[in-house]
Amino acid sequence: MTVTTRIAPSPTGDPHVGTAYQALFNSVFAAQNGGRFIVRIEDTDRGRYNAQSEGRILDMLDWLGIVPDASPRREDGDGPYVQSQRADLHRQYARQLLDSGHAYRAFDTPEELGARRKAAEARKDSYLGYDRRDRALGREESDARAETGEEFVIRLAAPLEGQTVVKDRLRGDVIFQNADLDDKVLLKRDGFPTYHLAAMVDDHLMGVTHVIRAEEWLTSTPTHIQILEGLGWQQPEWIHTPWLLSSGGKKYSKRRGDPSVEDFRRMGILPQALLNYLGMMGWSMPNGEEVFSVQDMVQHFSWERVSLGGSTFDVTKLRWLNGKYLREKLTPQEVVARLHAYLAEYGSDLPHDAYFDQVALMMTPRIEVLSEFQEKTPYFWSEEYPVTEKAAALTLGGQDALKAVRRRLAALPDFAHDTTDAALRALADETGVKVGKLMQPLRAVIAGTTESPGMFEMLEALGKERVLARLDRVIQG
RNA sequence: GGCCCCAUCGUCUAGCGGUUAGGACAGCGCCCUCUCAAGGCGCAGACACGGGUUCAAGUCCCGUUGGGGUCACCA
Image (cartoon, rainbow, N blue to C red; front, side, top):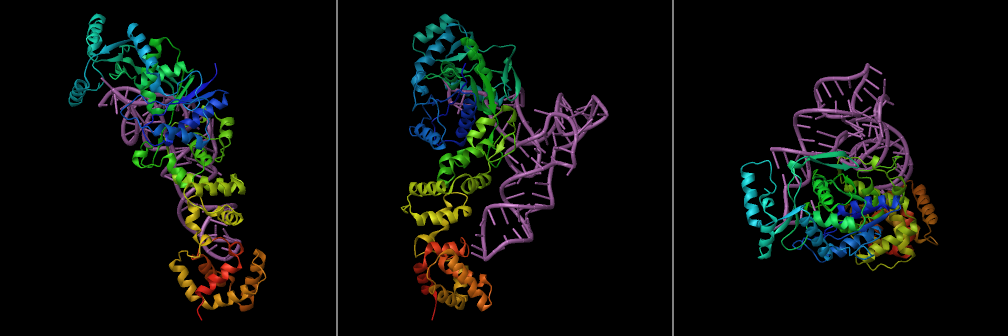
């Protein structure tokens, strides 16, 4: 049986980092086993459905470079991969469960249920599930009431005694007492299945062999097992992955203000770096290496190396890792190409020429994320660049040095790195001042700031004409 | 509240009975240096607690505490 894994995101809003996390582990495990990884959109909650969301989730996967073997954009014989289009199938199996006695109709209205639940909470009942009152209804009565058009849901007739054991790959046997469980809704009044039914039906029909999902699903797994048993289907392997948390120790969530994948993209995080970072959340390479590719992960992945405590997402470390990719993992050509494409995507019209490459290369060790590039380089793109207070003071106080420097630079045949280097050092030597005393005012003038790339590469890039003009603009007398 | 999961530096983690408890990010210091970075070197920093088991426990067992999840006609 070929290994098949899946993610089943709900199209309710922004593409979630958790979805990317699950996509990573699911796709890596499938790839390692020569299996298939599929994406199924779970849109059975018509109330929370968001039309744009599906496309954005699929776009996110594209951007990350995670290619599903099947998805709504890549249908094969086992689809459709959009759950709402499979509702007939779900109804059919709900019916089968009903007929085999593994499920029953419940006619309680949502209002009744809500009231009873409130009462149970008020009584401080430990059992807050469905009280199973319609489970006692005879089939004839149930059929008759349904016949008259009375609305109902179909609930699982879960076993009342004994236990259900979840054989979790990561946690071992997790034992649930059936008495603690309740009869979950399988088919809602609107005729759509709940996640519980739909996911199990689809997973089975799509040949999913390993259900790899977040830990929050662990407690509903007994229900899933019971549905599978009711249908007479084989269980997949269950694997519940650890939590992704945000700084407060709470679940990582866009709603709490944590960045979405699109936010990271906008920030100028590389997809490789994001994937790498996600990979080290809860998993580590056997050799301890922290910088690794998806291919490395495919090669070395094992559940044994997954740690179970939740991991707190640290944007600072992600940024460091992203900088590492910029400096060490990407070739200079790749960096300039990525950077230019990024800037173009967000509205910049800088031409991609040799000058751009030159500036990009000298800035590479000085930025961690792509969005920092333009903020830190205004003086390369215009004669009107901001001047910091410190730089202004340096310009004012360094007039003598600036005059001397201007004279010396003006006499140079060209502004090649080595030429200006030799000239300024010679000037410092001759006048007996430290070379820094010359360079800091110069830097303040040509960059408007005291922080910049190396002086000589900067001079070479800017060129003689622009540099002298900038000096002339500030030299007084 | 019931049930379930989890627990090593601030953070991500290594450790799978015997270690001076290792690495990375962040922090701090030094070096390099024309500034800022990058880079190099170093400092500081953790086994939640209590019982067992064992010659030996961060590692195994139990309990406590703490954190999280779940108990929706949401996924």
